[in-house]
Image (cartoon, rainbow, N blue to C red; front, side, top):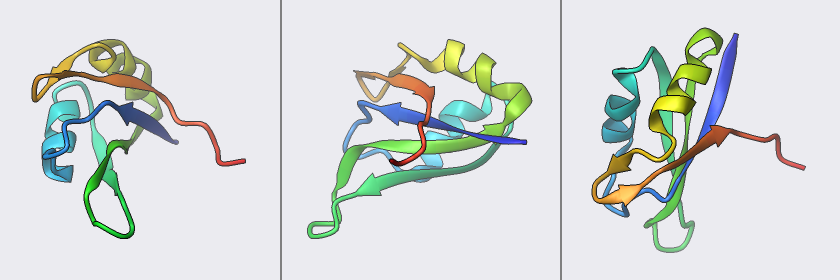
Length: 82
């Protein structure tokens, strides 16, 4: 099964490849995407990483509070849109 993790407080210049690489050392990353502003195309400072269910809790524990590009990340399980 797949779980989606929310990743907040990303540096503006972070690419999807960098985001996936940061999480890959803690388990298998299925996909990574950074949310961008529709008008400017600039990062909104958060994204999502899809991971295997078995790796999700370990990734949250390892990456929540970790530093990436000089910023402290917020990582938790993504909630469904309401």
